[in-house]
Length: 307
Image 1: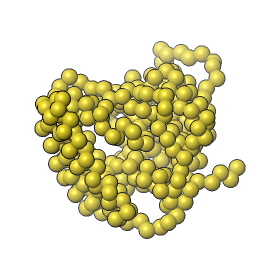
Image 2: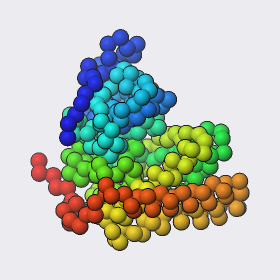
Image 3: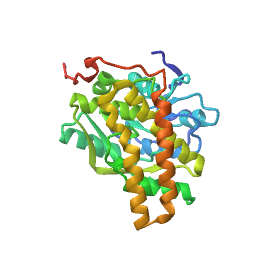
Image 4: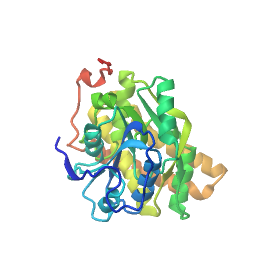
């Protein structure tokens, strides 16, 4: 996998107004995938920097805004995934990382000041191979943003292991790797393999970080379609053993409508559309010919430390 680098100047490019003191840094490389993220990325990277990781890597997906310009002020490396997508970007960042631990932080995450240190301590104390921070959804004041926040704060997904604010032993992540054919749902696909292989993964008991949602119907629609397509791709790849994942949108819609009727009836249309659009996305994912059916048992082989 080739790595095209825009910049590798060391922490904070020349001329930056931000100065940091010489304090011991965590042995963590933070990978931030980004594409047209100019509205989010500065707050994300400033928060990452306050956590004092040894390395910050931004992997850009051919942004057409000022994402790269902003990233250069904070990152040790700004790479280009050449349009390969978020799964490819995560893999590229992990392969380029120079530290024994790699954290994945999406641009819509703003870490609390001790989040990485706390995740690092918890991962070691619990003898885990990977850990995900808890997410506290935040958003705008419009109907769709408020509904998304209500959904994710009350839904089951907040208890699932994911990648948007996670910490891995780097060698563990590289052992499993990402399937770059997944343009969405790459976190679901990886979680499926991690769980099947018996990997030691967990949700943090202590660390909670804000997860920001955008505003408007189009943003919500994009979320639903991406989630549904990801589920469809997982079933296309793994077949009937993974088919139970297709029940997730139905369960979420029924539970959400039931809760809304009791507490917030204005959100009933949201959950009805959530279910319908997720299943439209699932059909799209099931038909995605880029995703190949995998029958190899090697994909579920657990990581073994050979050091």
